[in-house]
Every structure is written in C-alpha cells, then in structure tokens.
Amino acid sequence: MTYYNHTQPGRWPYVLYALMIGLIIAICLIPNEQMVVAILSAIAALLAFCGLIFGSLTISDEGDHLTLHFGPLPVLFTTIRYADITSVEIGRTSIIDGWGMHYVPFRGRTYNVWGFDCVKLTLDRKIIRLGTDDAKELAKVIRKRMGGGISE
Image (tube, rainbow, N blue to C red; front, side, top):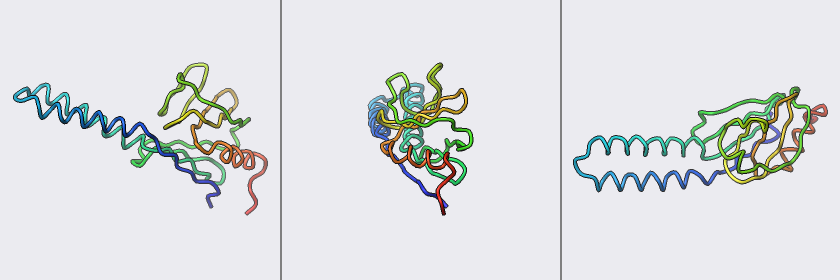
C-alpha cells in the first residue's frame, strides 16, 4: 500500500518544446539543405524526447523504499531503501545541483524537475537531493518510515 505519492510537474518541457517548434520552423525555411535539415530534425527529436522524459518527477512510498521516476514517459527511475537512509532534512538545491538527474562531486546525486526546494537524504556517505514542491510532507513520511514505519 502506498502512503505517499506525489508528482511535481516540471517547466523545462515547455522550453524544450518551444525550441523544438523553432527548429521545425527553421527546417521549413531551409530548402534543399538535406544535411542541415537532418541535423536540425535530430535535435528537434531529442528535445521532444527530453521533454517527455523530464516532464515531471513522481516520488512514491512503496513500503520499504521510495520510488522515483521521471515522466510522463517513465524511462528513468530509481529506488531508495528506507533502511539505507541515515538522515533526512529539508533543504534547497542550488544552480550547481541543477535540474534533471545527475551527480555533482562533493554534493551528491540530484533528482529534480523544477524549483529549489528539496529533501536532502544522507545514505552512509552518499547524499541524495530529491527536488519537490512538497518537501515538508515528503520529509515527514520518510522520517516516519525510518522510525519504524506507519501503522497500517
């Protein structure tokens, strides 16, 4: 049974889609340049794909672990076991942490689609930042799970 399930919409897909539309317009305006058209088409397709992947971030409580997945095309996902979490705090990401799914040396792994609010998890020596617009509730659920679970 899931006790927490929250999807945060991202804003970057709109930027990516606007760039994609601009590329499509440029393709229509460039006659007889097959190589340029092919390159711009590939870039436009890549922008659309990234927009579909990073359109939102869903974080779900799955009993003994959290599941994170980017969507609406849920290609990228990960799980974090509550037993591995040593501390939880509400925090803020920075420009260095960025948006998307990536690792920054000395700052840890970041999963974020928009904004700067996050829940910072420490797992032994690893740090994971979960970008969310619902940081207080997410941190509360994680702390309850770390402290013995939520009664069913």
